Image (cartoon, rainbow, N blue to C red):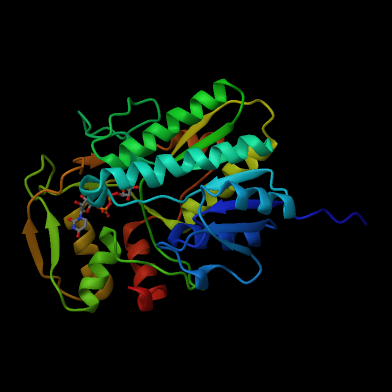
Length: 329
Ligand code: UFG
């Protein structure tokens, strides 16, 4: 009987929150994950035992060549990035350097090795401030309002240029608000985004700051589209398989969201229900760089990748973080 060789896949940022979930999903699907992470926010303990771990920078061309020499990977999943909207407004250069500068180095290494397939972790923040309350399709014009969103949009455009030059075949996945946890993966979660911030505040009996309650929304707080990290991982697996099979070098973009908007106050109320705890709210000023409404039309991912986000109800997302990741809050 022929034994199929295991396909190695390079995952930059694979020791981070999303990366560590994805690494385990890829491994369970029969791939060999090659995790490249500089541990600036990721944790080595999050890398599963059977994955290969390389501590280093995604811009380190010598290291990438060495990894390729030992494990000739046909595709890269590029997750490594600085990801906090508020921080990006305060430190724009850091965001352009980390996200754009280092990715250029990575792309040069890939070009040198002749690796064309890349799954890129982009963001709903490329859309910016909407004019209506209609969920965004991938064709809506990009107009980011934070350096983080700008950095992701710049990279999407660079990938499109490389695609036109036939150097790269990319799939850009525009994440909406990712949270949640897997029951047995024991991955690390930092309290840098709304849901873990709320649960962390409950755990430490602290108030939750709500950034702005004067937006033009039903309750005055910002609307987001929350997606369970395991639904996001499913989409990556489907997109990777699509990319590996695709021979025509076109560039594709998919929204990964649920078509359902929840306000900051909706999320706080749901967290109160899940945890049976009353949350103390402190209203503060709007955070610069926050669009009022970011909700996905993900019809394209559902039809072209055959993806269904079936765990992404906010109650379920909050429940899973509270139940399966409490020690990391
Ligand atoms: N918020 C608060 N208090 C907090 C933290 C956040 O009110 O302590 C609010 C924010 O102002 C925003 C909402 O909660 O209105 C969500 O904020 P997050 O910081 O959790 O996430 P962002 O919406 O800023 O960004 C995230 C991802 C991006 C992605 C975006 C898409 O980090 O990659 O969701 O919607 F693009």
